[in-house]
Length: 89
Image 1 (cartoon, helix red, strand yellow):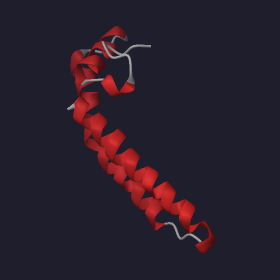
Image 2: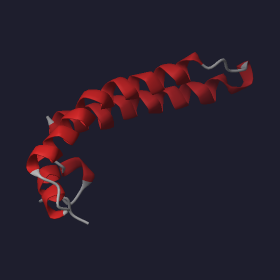
Image 3: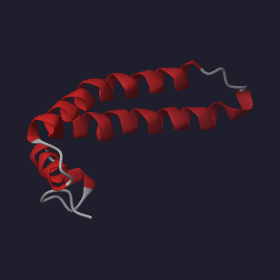
């Protein structure tokens, strides 16, 4: 289902979300408040989740797998969350 003009997640912009909200009956002002709230909380929440994963004590036998999971968490935080927030700004 398209969101505004975007057909893919990586194409979604602030205007697309506002338009999608309008289609759902959400006012522009309310949509912008929600977008701003999400944008200001997303990166700190992603960092907190990463920090929680990083703080977990892992047995030596699972250390390689844990390192891979931390790498994925870093990628998600930087490439998905931060990039999405930039598009919504």
